[in-house]
Image (tube, rainbow, N blue to C red; front, top):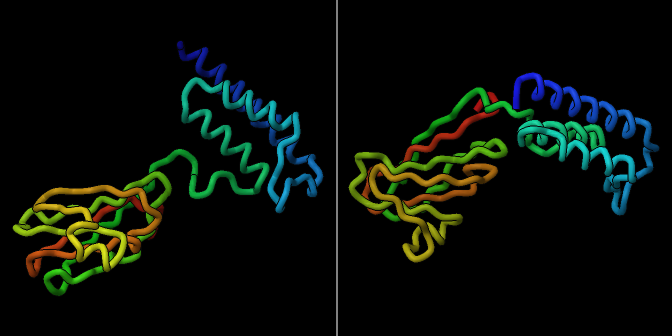
Length: 183
């Protein structure tokens, strides 16, 4: 698709968004579904379908749909802030204080769509266990194992949900994740 055609699609998508916002802005405030959920009338549903089918790439469709949902609910998709990558990272090191001692990772928020990377330090000679709970992380049969310099990634909302333990005193992990700001 040429540059002029792409520009035309972008203008058309923008026009659909403007129309959807105008329709939704004029809806009565009580036009919700059960339990206070927002419901779509036929005009809003037709606009949403047109937007979903109009963009030339997925990012354009996501942005358009998010704008429409934002107009409906006052916020858009939870945790989605445009289509930009977060501006910062955070990195931290965790070393259990004893062998086979369950150690919880510190609480760091993981932005929507990002992954927490947990990497066993490259100098590790033993095994690092990774799990959801203190009980699981001390049981080799219910935890994920990492050897030196090996990594695993998790899409979780916070690193606080993850525990580690080590088979060798003084060995641990390094973690990193993108941050929306102030990591």
